[in-house]
Image 1: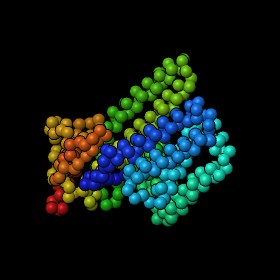
Image 2: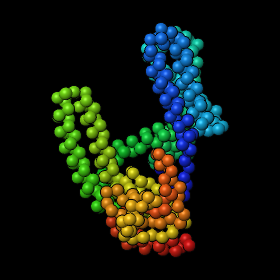
Image 3: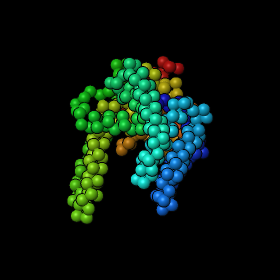
Length: 339
């Protein structure tokens, strides 16, 4: 997804914990508790309590994220609680739920109503969604699935399509933009890494299968998927060049980086930046395996938050191009026009 460098919305750490981690911990803890001897002796009570905990925990998590959630969000949360309680319950609890027709009908009604609402909303988006682009599929699937799941699903399908089918395809450069390649140095290193991975996967499979065929099969599947990912990544380096668009610099590094930096946010462009500046805490280095030869300095530092708390504000972005001179000339001209 294309994101502007000037926009940054992060939830507070406390809300993240309350809204995501605690509900998941409560549901998994309850799933372990209903497998105890006491719960299995009283499956009806255990099933009702587990269902209540699952729905209540997810609802509290929803309220931690949104102070005034929409009715369809509440319905989706309840359906998620019903689904989690059913899937994580042991067989005796499922049989107890089936023995209570009113409860089974209520659970089914909640899930069916949620699915119906989602399908209606997705159908309303279809006439205006461009399904030839990933944004269109992400928008439609986001009405039927959680947006995070929709993003992952679209990304994985796009990865498979890219790795298996898009051979000799033209680079993705819109008519109003100009593309600048960076793959000539990266691609050979990535190809070498892929060949080493093939050898490693083959040797590991032959060694592990002597102890466990199941483990060898699982590792082979994971290794095959990793190879597809590497192939797709290598192909995306050529297909997704850095762009100068009418509105800003569209920094792309294959499927890994996709960031739009508006011209109004750029203070200057620096060629062959110094090593200490590239390694600075307030610099984002997207050069991947190659040392960057360009750096964009921002007018105002952009706040950032990492996985474990705030990070130094972003003040510069370093990247590499195969032929940086035309890019620098055109960008400086664009900045002069925007000034």
